[in-house]
Image (cartoon, rainbow, N blue to C red; front, top):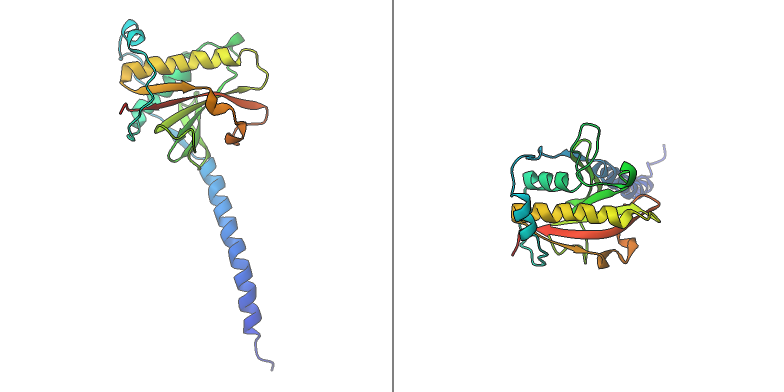
Length: 205
């Protein structure tokens, strides 16, 4: 009987192992990308009076490292682009109610898409925002269809809602358009969509 060729078997095993590890990593990334997190229901009654919020609204560029809690984040996203009627209409207007805007949330644990109907976050990437989008614990990314003549108007309506909520909740925020010059920074966007502006949000420093 011929002796077993243990060296060949070990070599084959060593070649298979990296491939298995890569497959596991890829499958884990795919699972993470589909993760959904339900947000706490927003308080639709409380908050600062509108005229006071308008008086307090301002741009603040210095943030602490403390991230808003889930209750605050849920209220922020609902105020920005949530559903406020049973027929699915939103807190911000859109031309012919087309709702042609996607709101993404960049945090330390990745990039998430806000699902207004379920008031939830759906992970689209487990990679956190890089420079120049990492100046605050939360960065909102407003995406619109390429060539949409109403895209800028829709985004402006939403980020004004965010600014008013931040004034009411004591949060700092600043809107930026320069952060979207390089569209390659947003590989998670669907084909035919572009980032129009971003809004950094956090506790004031």
